[in-house]
Length: 357
Image (cartoon, rainbow, N blue to C red; front, side, top):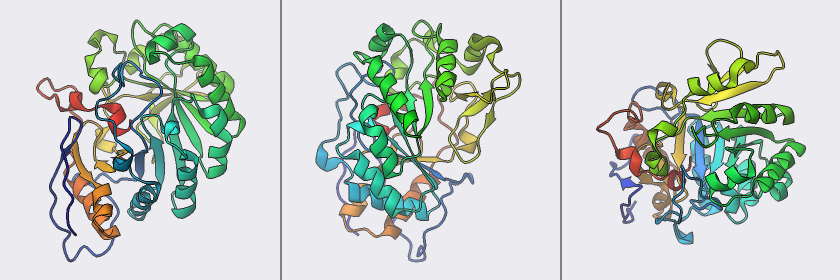
């Protein structure tokens, strides 16, 4: 198989990998050198977004947006997912950018649902276009959505998202619930921006039947530029929620993502999720692998190491060639993301929207 040329960028360093060994003649379950098993694929379908949140996107947008021919086509994306499923992936999350800005996204969801044996299809979205797409997505096979919403105040929302309309997002959330999609609300707590309304966000989520989750700000791309004093960790959030939660440690849900949950103290069955890459990193139990909108496999969100699965397909590579690239990429995965190491700055060059968060 010939290898197509690649150009390195701010967000990707393409690595060489050895030719597929002759005895690599079946697709193995994905594990890395530390024995971590991979069952969860995060597939970015675009690096573009109709919002520009202060911790994610530069005010004028990214300077490395993919042009159309650089994106995985739907057929290529389905093939990549199919090989991942043969290698043990059971859950696929569509990400971006904002996945709903990808033209005909409903068709891609339907193709993955019909042509692969994946157990669950979910999506992370800002919900600005969800009110009109919730039912088609549900019909196509989508199981649930994680909606990014950092405030319930319209003016604050416009500030954090640089112009977003909170009303459209709320309409999208209600539409998703109405058609039977599972809904989780993702909030990045920021001191001085939304830290005083975290309890209100929890009450809102519980009142509509959604699960609230708080994600610690990661020092990636634009997030690395925000003042450190703005960051709130899980303990800060738990303190802000007062007596709403039971006492005790948060518990993970096996086979899903990195969130750990604490139950409501009132016995209602509600819970709050915490994703803690800073205060309590979850790297030892990582089960996730990422593919960017350009088709690069990324073993870790915080690393720029990449292998182009797209180019393997376009060079005539087989499913075994794709699987070998996946195995090789994960074999070099580091122990953790190094966010707190003072001499490590690799992650600060990684644009969240360029990878798929």
